[in-house]
Length: 110
Image (cartoon, rainbow, N blue to C red; front, side, top):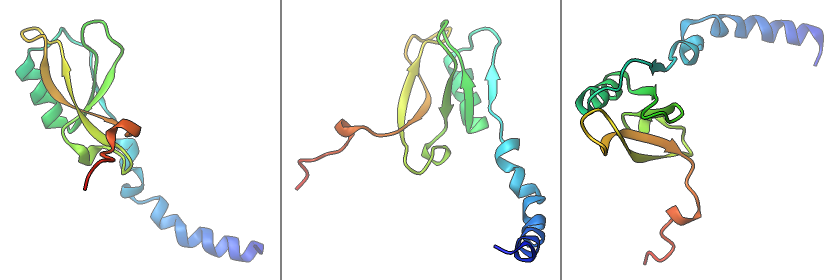
């Protein structure tokens, strides 16, 4: 491309790149829970209120939990996750986004 074309293209894109919407992914940082282990109701409320939260339970590495599939990438599915909380060893805290594998598809559907 010619330098003039690049300059015109760059000046046309500058307002879009400097808009607050361009920074939305950076501003949508995930909150990490580092306090004492919450109860099941507290953990579910946090994920529901935040939409997406990175939490760690029972010495496990931090994991991202989401309220619903809308917080996943287009190619990902939402899988219900159960974690140990202070009052419930199998708390249904929310969902985990992941890429589907071969076994997730129903190949025998008629």
